Length: 244
Image (cartoon, helix red, strand yellow):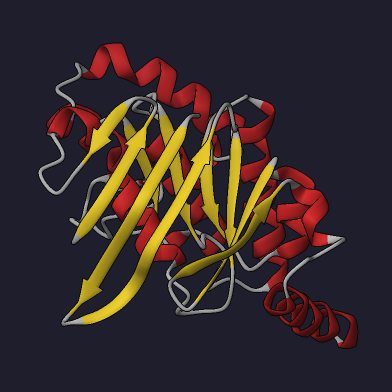
């Protein structure tokens, strides 16, 4: 993944949530965005997807200029996994995935089905494909959401805190599923509070605070933070984890 962000600013109702941020990355496979809630991580992810417009600046993803009028073809190359799985409650896991492929991407069912079944099996969901969302766990629902994102063969997968509403056991289950993306050499950007996971899986990390990028670099920066803000953030996160 090649990503260039130049002087990007985003406001909601006059409030600045991304403040003139810039970043230039080349050949990064797994990018993790970390920081406290409200730091702008999820907003940046939505702008990368082309789902929302921004006020000023530029975003270039793999040579594609993403702007406020981002084209449908670009958005169809992006797989997005939300904080909650967003599965349609009246459809089975399989039909949730097939609906996107057939209605949005115009694929024929007989052509798409074998590949979908293969990925469902890869993520341990083949036995749950005919179940509706209320019949499976939150972790299984998020894994189904990941499969749905992968089913379109995306150029880039974006994951917005996919474990935020899960207990520790289900969090571990979903993070193991995300690790499969890394092992399959999929390019993805993940917003996460799981610092240990970011350190293990990401090859580049961006720390955000109050709408700005405070520090960024390889995973080694988590062991040797340079800024006072990152030091304070890691101290709070790691102290809390160690006290559990």
